[in-house]
Image (cartoon, rainbow, N blue to C red; front, side, top):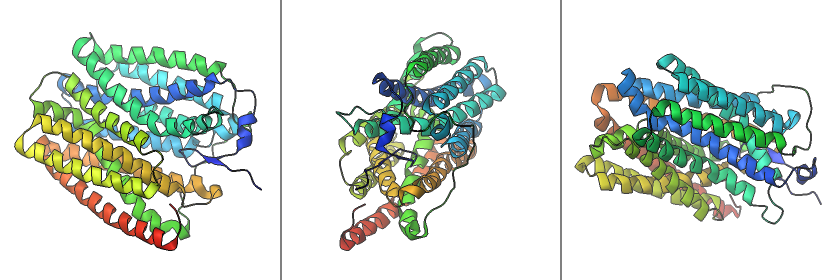
Length: 419
């Protein structure tokens, strides 16, 4: 009987023999988990600082969203170009290279005095995250403790939202209470990345085949013909989820400060942290729930959260806005977890990487393009009016995704299969 395989968040299949490759130290699992959280944490720090950049440099909301979108595009480019590089070179060298790029990006952020270096920093940061994603996903599965084999998948799922939440909250605290936050935030992160780099250098190699030649083999973007109908249904949820995420990570802090009529920058970072924290809680709570059921629950949560956000904007209620953000975050986390798990099961292991690459294309386009459009419209119609229109449009996408996912679930039950 063939041995079972495991799948990373990037869709790569990991054979149990990978666990026996080399002699990786048990601590390596936690080193990689820390790298994942740190990279995601650093990606959300600029979100809490965008308001400060706007004030100091006179940036428009449209330009802020362009800076954010550049990160999403370079993450996607790095993932598609280098996502499988660690399979030949090994997890350690790829993670090491990504951490070096992350340190360089922190230096660029710290030295930025205007838009040019800010764009460069965001681009290098995105490339670092894209380069590391495949290696982290595989290493976490390969290094999972034998006593808790599901822990790797759980860290893969919850690590990004934990990092995003901590980054938003930490940056908000530094902006409000620390000197030179646009420098100090990144210097602290550069130090943390240096420590993580030392940890990676000491950990054992976990890849079953490592030490090969440097080969850049772009991920193929392909959806198997038999899965295209279900893919089209499920990817609507991915689009809705990451459209919400892109909006909150780019303009969410500014909206919170405006609605709360506050000058406390911690409020902006706390808004991002609240969204990500609720998403993490939902993912942990529903980790064992069937994929389509999780997606449906998440879509209901998204719709409820969006309705509450619209209500809070309509009546100008700050407490309701914060409650709505928590509900929205719970739906966000559940919808992404359920739809991604359902999507990853649509292809055979040999083609799962191709399908997952297609998922990421939709995810990062949904994160970046609508956010840029919202930023440009904000310059014309104002932040609150644009936010109302944006949330209403996303609610429409969520409603369509919910309807089609419910039909897919019913058809799946009728066929006696499980997704």
